[in-house]
Length: 310
Image (cartoon, rainbow, N blue to C red; front, side, top):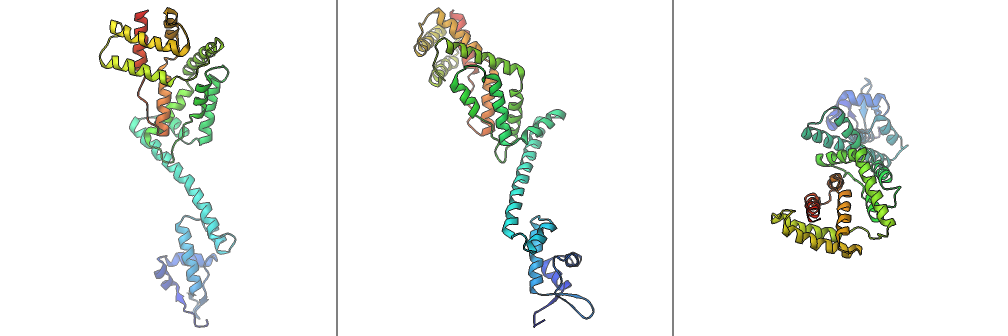
């Protein structure tokens, strides 16, 4: 054929690494038809057929089905279009596999069984939007109907769990625990009480927001007392309490008296649910944020010392 070099199907198999049977199948289905036949009926292939077969092999090794390969060869789709669509599909598959791996490792580490495994797998598959909706519903149910601290409500709404593309088992386990926590009716009831308390405080004139600096001052003062082994019912503890109540009186514009201490005790008790701190700890683990040190011992000591000083 005009001097074009033609090769046999056996030679083509040696050049491409495909079996004769596979090449013959591609020829019979029209994917890579032979260029010519010998008088004895043996197939022979020219350069165009060789190039076409190499493209078929490459696309198949990349995971494309024969129908898609045929559309490329028939110029119904470009290689670029097909590659882009296939890469997008692989991204989804890879993310799914990574999540499955993380769930399995979390199950292995925790010794989970039955319903817990199914729940963890289902939660791990949720999309970012589905996780966001879950948190929005949780916040709306607990804080949404009360005129609570707007800074806290906004923080809860915007601090959404975001599993990374390749979560580790600890992040998957943290997300499963957080999701269960948001559905805990007892925890929700506790937060509604907190929201109602904040709303009542705001109705009474409290327009203050979050008190990060005040919290850090409590952490510093009480942390020092804890480190020194100061008992909450000791005279030394009374001095620590006096310094902190003076600071609360200044921040909230109230007299530093017995009424302030009673008010502060109520405030600490309403906000003292340890599950609140656990919520933020889990959220930090999921999102890869620094996990803050626990304030539980600090406010536990402060509450005990306040009672002792009353």
